[in-house]
Image (cartoon, rainbow, N blue to C red):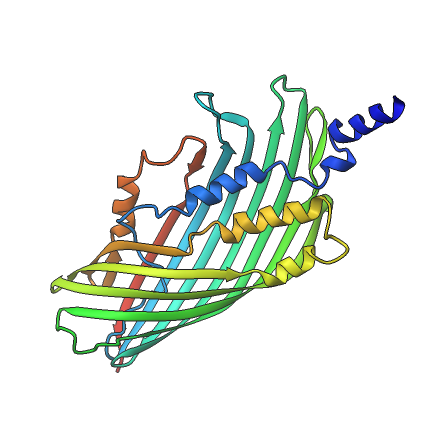
Length: 314
């Protein structure tokens, strides 16, 4: 009989050995990946790397994203959203881009810098017991893109561009263990273990610019992009981390930070040229059209700003 009680204690006691290999964030992260994989809507702007070649032109482009996410546990049936079991992600992503265009081809160079912070907090219904976990992610790297016009004489008002590109990102990834106790839990910087690895990003896309008016174009586009996270996986699949809590936490972090983005995207954008600026309004229209479309347990208040300026070469 004592052996049975010991076994039950190991299975159900918070922080027990059997529970350490499971990250309780998994249902929240998995559902977010599933929701984000759905194409957000027809009206949206293409990735900033979708530069359409224009003869003897230099394109300066940049994109800034302020990330502000709150992911909560998916409620069952008609139950209310549980805000006491939530993952928050905050930070920024900055990506300047420079492209040099010849007659039918453009070469683009980009830099990426991002800094994200994730925190999961669970509090029981009596507000006496709390669990917490933190992760941080910093990336920096260089990208190279190639865009070309496969049919340069298609039509004077139509320009079809094909885009190929890739980025190599240096990643600093900080991870804390899942901490539990009666009362509030605090995680300090000393509790976070850091890892460094490389992530590669590959992209291929199509972009069709239809110039309905001299300074106005309708731009249907599609894009396929994927992250290669083999470097990170090699870390937590090593013998030292191949079982236990850290492996599970790292897997969820990689899903959240990299693999949550849909691989295949498509949309319809609108381009307006104003005093030398190429203003894209598809993303704004998409945001307005989808204000009430998101599920209640995912709050996405992120803001993305992008701008593109074209300059004729000498």
